[in-house]
Image (tube, rainbow, N blue to C red; front, side, top):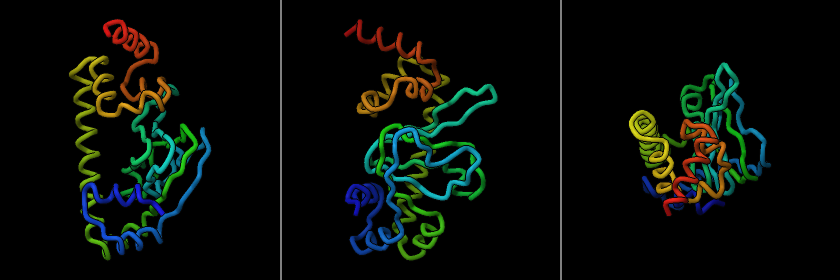
Length: 193
């Protein structure tokens, strides 16, 4: 079903072909059109979403109605409202499809059962969650300690495909700046090149 997912699992753990067959049996494949939401603010996040094709974003809306992008995801990425998924309580993130997507949904109850039969899956998700936490901490630190231009350059260095796939307004929000500021930064960078 999903060799991309099999390879993804084996980045941080070792999942055998037989174990992967067990995992495949609980996966739900969805084709989702651009601009549709997989998750709405206030919903319980019942799935972890693995992106096989397309692009998504998770975001929250503040009291003034401004959107704040929390995560960007393209092929070979996982996306979810992790707090809601782990606690199975209503979350504060929405997940929207930016490009038509093919996603694999891993249901919470099935994952909990798989942890008992496939210990290396638990290892994979522990490492994935740890990396997500480290990334979040680094992102918070950089938002407080380096310039917006440096944050943009670092994002483009780590994820070069994102700028051609994700609208600049979402990249700006992810970086914590306005779209106008990002436009000025990009002009400044290109004028130096």
